[in-house]
Amino acid sequence: MARMHEFRLPDLGEGLTGAEIVGWLVAVGDVVVVDQPVVEVETSKARVEVPCPYDGVVAARFGEEGSELRVGERLMTVAVGGGSTVPVPGDAVPRAETSSGLPGPPGPSGERDTSGNVLVGYGTTAPSARRRRVAPDGLRAHGPPPDGAFVDSGPAASVGARDAAVATGPVPVVSPPVRRLARRHGLDLRQLAGAGRQGLVLRTDVERAIEQRAAAKGSRVPLKGVRGAVAEKMARSRREIPEATCWVDADATELLAARAVMNAAGGPKISVLALLARLCTAALGRFPELNATVDAAAREVVRLPAVHLGFAAQTDRGLVVPVVRDAHTRSAESLAQEFARLSDRAVQGTLAPAEVTGGTFTLNNYGVFGVDGATPIINHPEAAMLGVGRIAPKPWVHHGELAVRRVVQLSLAFDHRVCDGGVAGGFLRYVADCVEQPAILLRIL
Image (cartoon, rainbow, N blue to C red; front, side):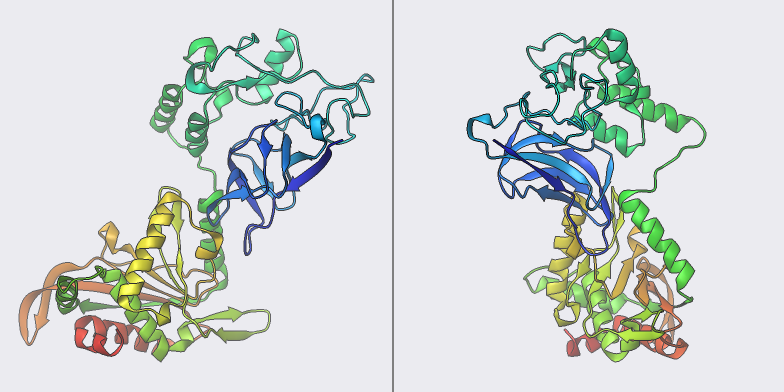
C-alpha cells in the first residue's frame, strides 16, 4: 500500500518567507525521483526550481501558476511505495483538493472528504470519479486542442455546474506561455473572450487586451515578486536611514585611455565598471566606516571585515542587485569576469538566493541610462552606495587651459549614523583622484 507524503514549500534562502509559482514541471500521475525539479517558483530574490525529496508518483499539486505560497505551506503530495498499487495518470485523486487547488467532490453524505490525500480504493468514503483530460466541450480529446493546452474536467457534471465552475475555477484551455504573458501584465484570463476554436484564449487575445488597457487611462501593476521586494526595501531605507549625499565631478579622460591600453595588451576585457569597483574596494580599505551596517536594537555600528560588492542590474523582471563575494580580494580582471557572469544570470532570471544577498556596499552605474547624476537610495541594511553617471565630453579646465574632456559625476549616499561628512568626503575624493590619475591604480590593481 502506497504511503502519502506531503511536500511543503521549503526555506529557499536568507530572509525569504514565500514564493510565487511560475510553472509546474510535473503533472498529477507523473513518476518523480529524489532531487527531480518539480516546480519553478519566483521569490523576491530570484527564480529557482524546487526539487522533490521523494521517489514516487505525484498525487496532488497545491497552487496554480501565479499563486503565492508561504514557506511551510503544502506544495504537493507524493505517493511512495505500494508496488502495483502505485497510481497512474488519472488514478491519483487527492481528496481534499484536486491538482488545480479546487475542493474535491463531495462524499455520499454531501460533505467533502477531509481524510487526507489517499489512493483510490483506500479512502474512508466512496472513491471519486476518474480524472481525465478532455476537450473544452467536455468530449474526450484525441489530441491537443489549439495552443497545446487542456482543461481537466474532474468528475462528471452538468453543463450548468461546469459553467459555474469556470467562473471561479482554472482558466480553460490556455497554454503556459499565454498564462505567463497575462500574469506579467496583470490580466485575469477569465475576463477574456477567446477567439480560438471552442473559446480558446490565444496569445493574440491577450496581446489585444494589453493594448486596450494601455490605451485606457490608468493602470494597476501588482507590487509583488522582485518589484515588490525592491519597493519594500526602498521604503524601509527611507524610513530608517538618515541619509546624506555628496557628489563630485571628475575628469575620466585618462582613466579611459589607460583602460584602452590595458585591453589592447590582450587577455579578458576590463570594463569601466570593473575599474570603478576596484577603486571602491581600495577606498573602503582606507575608509572602513562605510563598509558597515547599523544594529539599531543594540545601538551599535557593525564594521564588516569583508567587502561583498553589490551592483545594480536592470532586467525585465525589475531591478536586482547581484553581489560579488569578497570583492576586496579580486583584481580588476576578476571583477570584470564576475560582473559579466552575474549580469547574464540576472537577465536570464537564474540568480541563486546566495547571489543576491549579503552585500555590504553597492555600486550603481546609472550612467548607462544616459543621465549625468542622481541621488541613489541606500540598499538597506548597507551604509553607503556609490552612484556613477554617464561619462560625457564637457568643457574642463585642464592644465590651466579650457579643453574638452570626458567628465563623470560621482555621487555617494551614506548613512550619517556610521560617519560624518569628513569620512564620506574623503572616500569620494579618493575615488575621484584615482579616476583622474590612473597611475594611482598601479598600487591597487
